[in-house]
Image 1 (cartoon, rainbow, N blue to C red):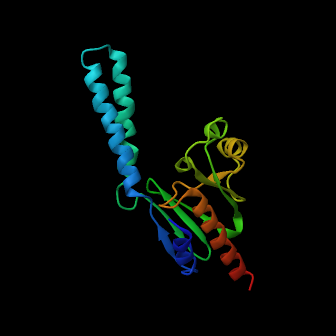
Image 2 (cartoon, rainbow, N blue to C red):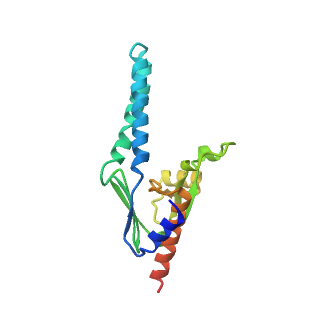
Image 3 (cartoon, helix red, strand yellow):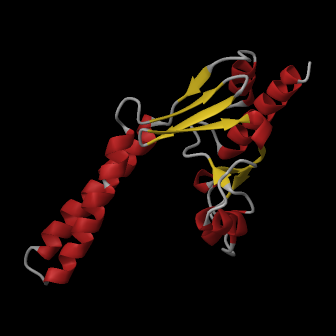
Length: 178
């Protein structure tokens, strides 16, 4: 999506505005996993039992994208108080006052690559002051330099979504300080 779409969404402040992940992306991922599972089954049929591990891996790998295609499985709802992220039917609410530093990032493995990875590998990470101080949160903060991340890019590039989240947050914080 482009900056005009971001501006249209920002014009709807204080919302609520709900963004949904790309169904096309999740469908392609599910189909890709299923193709690998079927191809692996053909190879494993006359082969050794270890080859069935690949079939199981890709077969199980198709489950998450399949679930993400179901209605209500994933969304990002923005309003004046914060945002609610739904991922695999699990809802997490964040307040704008507690969330900051929205940034598009590559996964740590790709950041270390000498070759520039494609931009579709990026995700949006951020800091949340109320995030529980668990081992996972500390590891996440160490690796990503942030303690939380959004579950999808919701049809945007990660860079555009990070800008949108930052600008919406700025509007919300300004509205609360009046």
